[in-house]
Length: 192
Image (cartoon, rainbow, N blue to C red; front, side, top):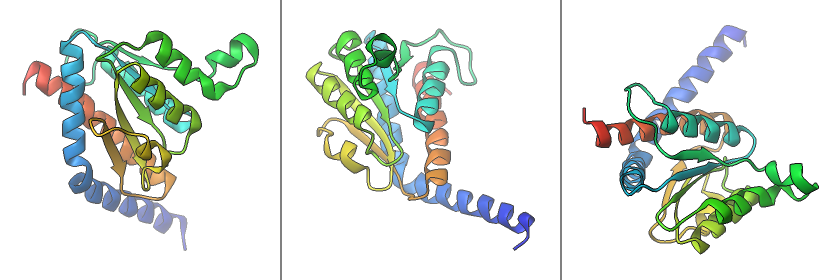
């Protein structure tokens, strides 16, 4: 198969995954955008976490929320948690970084936005537990079947689970989901 065909196949597979996801995760994306907006309007904050590629997505999301997506608006209280912070201090277990930061910074009414490719990242799961202990809600953005993270969510949490198994397709769809969420927040705050 020539490279040009492989490239075409990648685009076609990505497009089909996005089409499938639009119908499956559209409602939870809208629910999460409303929850996030209500959090900001109540002077709460959103803490975003993820490891590896999901960590990059977490930092990107926090940057959009604290700066802007497309429309000018005041910055919103969003922070990307850093798993490595514990290891910097005492060579500790980096999986404890997220839950320790949630315990230190989280307040009732805040939201933990947890990103994990398959919902199996230990530090992200522990962060969700810590958020619940702080009376925070959790929005989980995963792929596959949602993994252990989905199993740890409460009834009032929100699961956005990308209907894909390929990490490439999951990350692409998670990125578009972040754009939809931030656009939804802007819509609720600023109007059309």
